[in-house]
Image (tube, rainbow, N blue to C red; front, side, top):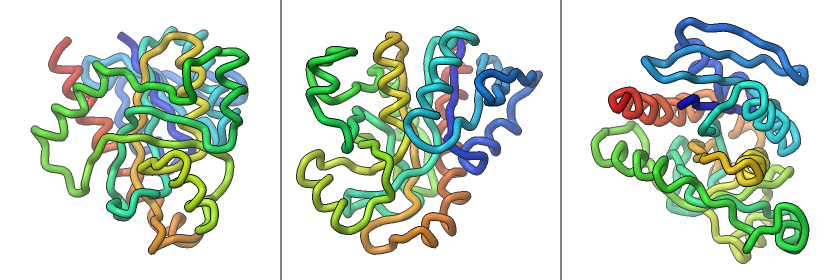
Length: 231
């Protein structure tokens, strides 16, 4: 087992990379890949850059050059469901694009049955166990995410809720899930909320990004520690 771990920005992944032991650094596609161990778990982590294409490039390199067997996305997201507060954490059960026409995915490669990329059931089962057994400083829930390359305003939020009714929205998870689907690689996403409908804006995002990122990394670490106990 080798786990690929992707964060969009330095804030979203570097606190985890600093915890990797026996660290080695490789460069591919203008990205730095940090490989080593978290406990007994073999990991490769990086920050990929913002948006879908950057995330997809990083994911394919993880698969082709590092032979990862599973991928976890960690980082932050915008809250869509009104029950979520800033710094709560969402774990993906399924992911869709909110800015890609359905037919592009179902009538062309990768010829999906519907628009949703499903997260891996076994990885989710570990998440459910973690939520039951641990006390986090924030709410941790499982549910739907959507991805698109736009910072969501009030008008955009209404359209997204009407069509997809997700818990949260981000700019990378769909791209990573898409590559995992095409390569048959299990994945989950763990993303914490930086902004909500009532507490929104770029300034709010920037203010909360670091703290929210640490929350998603806390859940990621618990996932890896659970796997560590199984090895």
